[in-house]
Length: 151
Image: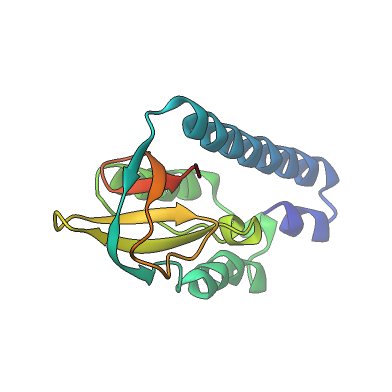
């Protein structure tokens, strides 16, 4: 959106949107780091693992598609706000989650891992869990999302 505004020479709107994006991204990284330090750490022993971030390219395409044909003058803030509100509500009330491509840029990856108890989690880690005999020290962000915090 900031790029759309910049291309239409709406510099003030572009700067506001870009600053908002930087603030939201910084807040997300702060919360991620805070949770990694403050939440209870415990080990997990995966019995199987498979990549869960395969759809990153599809998500990027979805993010960038509006830039192909939408001008800022055609943009409707009420519709956009309602759409984002519905998506956020649905994602927060389900066990579904979007894999954010920005995490991949920061060298984080997500994997679906199963435990011997039969529970499947999404593990966000910088390592690849190729050795299922290895344990991971994690914190639990949600019921089914774990973040590897190392030893």
